[in-house]
Length: 573
Image 1 (cartoon, rainbow, N blue to C red):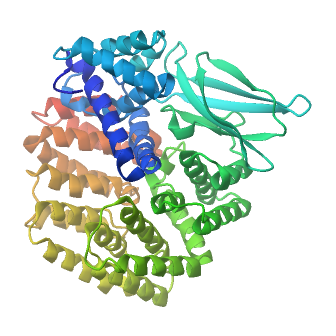
Image 2: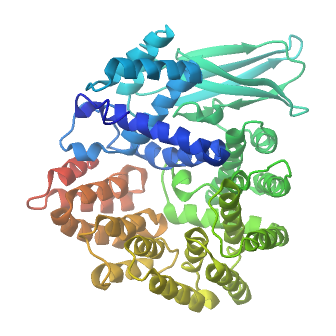
């Protein structure tokens, strides 16, 4: 319906069908097994980790691009995922019934017709009798808008005022739906349920009268717009984050508050700032989440306990230092694991016993998926305590048992990923698991892709040497297989601490691979380059110069493809 029956008039309208279809898939997936909040978290993790990165780089473009050399280069996170977020904003602004009215009119008008993004906007506006001309600016605005906030509370009047400001690459203000709820600072009671504010000016103040006491705002609930939210003061209030992480009634924002609190601790450790108080709040929040009986969904608990990824953390720093980010993240993770080792092991053991009741039966209902997800999170924390030889043996034994008893790929990969990064006393267990997984794959191409990806993503000092050996001599690796290439090469480029080694060996390896790959599959070569080298401006001078050198090398190759040429040319600007 949103692809073949109502196709695009031209390639510039690609986000019309792709963004809409991605949104519809997200809505459908969120209804399966009652997992809307989990699905939303997963989607936002991708947007913040990949799409925001694209917005901040030389390939930044609106969801409806103005021009292109090779259209293949615009099958991007922006067109697909940010495009889906723009469609979601229609739903947020108009409400689910209003959105459905707009969809009905869209199909009635345009079934079997080739249409534009403007046609979709017109259907939404006409069906609901509203003016969406300001909203149309989202289609032509590149980059990630930033929303800043500040607030005041007049105790005598019972008046809370929230001031929102927006900045973007558009000279005119966007229409930004900002979903907000207010919680009483003393009791935690939700005194103002989710309300959608329409930010239409550069700066607006919204009044909330009739309050009995001061409140804490829960802003941008359910990630109501693809923006970055920052306090006007520049520094997050960690006590507010801790409050929201334990009391927010909105599942998504409760998770998000914990993520921001974890991030604050990790960045303070990385920057060698005083962090004892922040870490204390992190431990307190983690402990509350671990034992909170009010959380009935194991998947929600799992996501609430996971630390922000290295990619997400990279979006919060001015100059990216991948080894420093990894080291700081591991430091905080180990502190959490050490503090709650007994509780984590007890919870892991109880979940294991519950799962074992099913025997060899592999279930894919929401409850079973949540149990596996949460148990793998517990395992990850327990296996992060590996300072001594005895701890290494203990972690390897636990992960090996998990690996050998797995009844599905989720648990198998969960354990293998941890084992693949083990050294010292865990080395023999690592090699045994790697060999067993390869043997059990029995040549299955999809399973082998996972095997190559796990090896490329390992946190080992010699991971580059291992990847080079796999790419040059392993009988199951070939550049002619796009997915095999992505599994090994692209995954290695996302293993940031290894790929961005300051000596540049990772960049040189990638340049060698891409020189060959461009002749075999220029589209994969271009996308691999886009995701790995063109963000050089966010790294220190040494790394940046080495990354640029590889871009120059690829750009100047004889008979370089248009796909790769466009990426390299824009990446060097």
